[in-house]
Image (cartoon, rainbow, N blue to C red; front, top):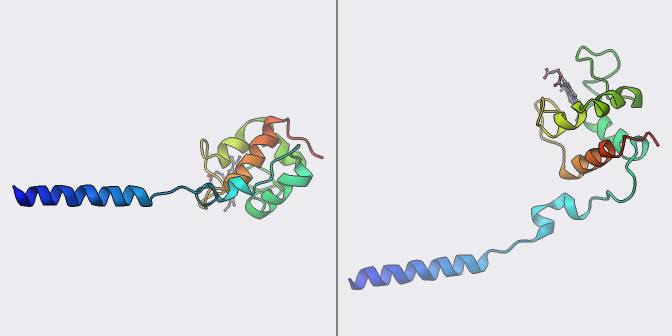
Length: 122
Ligand code: HEC
């Protein structure tokens, strides 16, 4: 009985110590959220073009076999309008970039905002 009491108090002490040590820092949990600049209007030229260049264009140039073009505004506008751009990068549709990590939270926020606001070119 004495041992059981001792064990119980040790467990309590430990859980108390552990919970006391737990802390959240927004910048550490969401590294992109705090330094991600999504203020103002997102435009193809100013914000989206570079994301496509870094993550999509290698596989989606003009005339590629997938039929999806991300290298220019004309092509990208097609999948922005039909919903495939957002569903692919958000992984609710066919996950893109194919066989790679999901885009950063910051890039996703920019793409979402751009699509929602009618995907302006400039
Ligand atoms: C490594 C090559 C590769 C990269 C990088 C890549 N894609 Fe794809 N993508 C493909 C292939 C191949 C397909 C054809 C479908 C399949 O095989 O999954 C495809 C299909 C798609 C489709 C059509 C999906 C559907 O449901 O029919 C969209 C939209 C798309 N890609 C957008 C993107 C976007 C946006 C990016 C960048 C974030 C990207 N892709 C990056 C290879 C790639």
